[in-house]
Each structure stands twice: as structure tokens, then as C-alpha cells.
Image 1 (cartoon, one colour):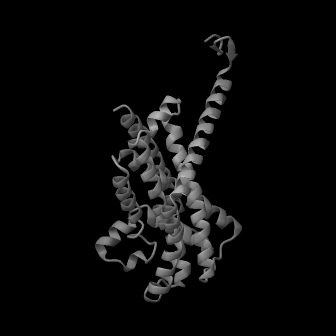
Image 2 (tube, helix red, strand yellow):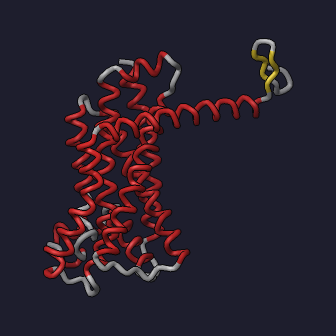
Image 3 (tube, rainbow, N blue to C red):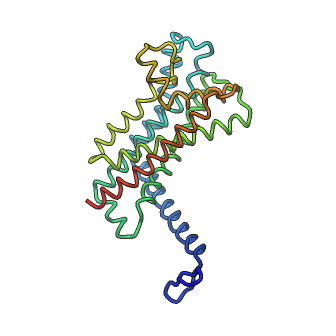
Length: 273
């Protein structure tokens, strides 16, 4: 290196240009991996149909079967939509957990490493594909909700804020399940781990007010990440201030940071065994 210039063969390349080339290569790899993951999802028709049908099943189940018995101080369909959105994110992320575990345990990663595809690109590609699936799921949830009488009172700015919180929730859930996928020794074990994480949304304010829960459940529901996330979405969509916004964002960002670090370490550990 001379005067800030990196010598590569006969080509002089500035550090900024080298960094730009590295970023372009990584982004290209992430797009390829995301496209691959999306195509694999399309081939698994049964799992894809279940992931897309689940929002309809949950909305119908809670609104028409349980809605009349649950008192929230407002129309139950308006209350439950944020919870269904978050629950569906969790179930959709299970596919990421199983997909990462399958690739790590079936030799796919060895082939990728022979082509100099890094672990960051591999994990980020799975996450990006999951984000795309969750966007489709969220649109479906909202469509079904409107058909069932959901009438939000959010302004355009509130919708943008709600979308931002939802996007952070998707990333947090997906990185957690991707990390568990890197930990699991089989796709079956990964499925079990993923469903356990998805279940965390039930003992929260997603479907019933926390104050109506048993005391021991209430303590957990009040201090877990899903409750502030759901309360924030509910407040924004109702057109009222989301009192838990700071807490929700902090939970999401903290979860993403820890999961990304753990996923990177687990990937290195598993591929060097």
C-alpha cells in the first residue's frame, strides 16, 4: 500500500473503489441467494400455501369464534389485526429456520464456499427472501381484515410508522429463526425451534388484553418483546399515539444485533467443523 493506494496486480485501486467493489459483490451474492430461497419456497407448495392460508384461518378463528367472548373496550376485529400480523410473521419465519438448517446440513454451504460465497451473503439471502414472503402475508392479512370489517383510523404518517415497526419486527423474527437454523442439526429440529419462537406471540397482548390474564402469565406478557410491538402497531393503526414505540424499536434493534452476531459465529463454527 502506498499513499492510500492498494496495489492489485497491475491495477491501482483506491480504498473507496475497493470497498465499493466488495459491497457490489456482496450485494450481488445476497440477491442470488434470496432469489434461490424464493424459488425453493415456490417449489414447496404445501408450506407456501399454509403460510399464506394461515392469516385467513387466524382472522376467522379469532374474529368469528372468540371475538364475541373477548372484551377489549373496542371492536375486536380492530383489536386483533396487529396481533395476527405479528403471529403470521413468526410462522413465516419458521420456513427460514428450516431452510437455513437444510442448507447447512445437506452440503449446500460447502458448494457455496467453493464459489467464494461468504456466510454473510448466505444468511442475508435467506432473510431477504423471508422479508418478501412476509410482505405478501401482511398484504393478505390486511385484505382479509378489511373484508371482515377492519376500519383503521391511521393517517398516512401513522401507516408509514406502522410499516417501519412491522419491517423491524420481520427482521428481528427472521434473524432469530435464521440463527436457530444455524444451530439446529436437522430441518426437523429447526422446525420445532421455529414454532417455539412463533408461539411467544400468544402470551402477549396480541389477542387479549394483558390485564385479563392470570397473574403469572401477565408478568411474562408485560415484559416480553411482542407486547410493546403489538401495542405500538395497534396505537398507530387506531390513530392514537403508540405509547410503546421506543420500547418496541429498542427490542427489535437489540434482537437483530444479537442475532446477527450469533448467526455469524454459528455459521463459522458449523462450516469449520
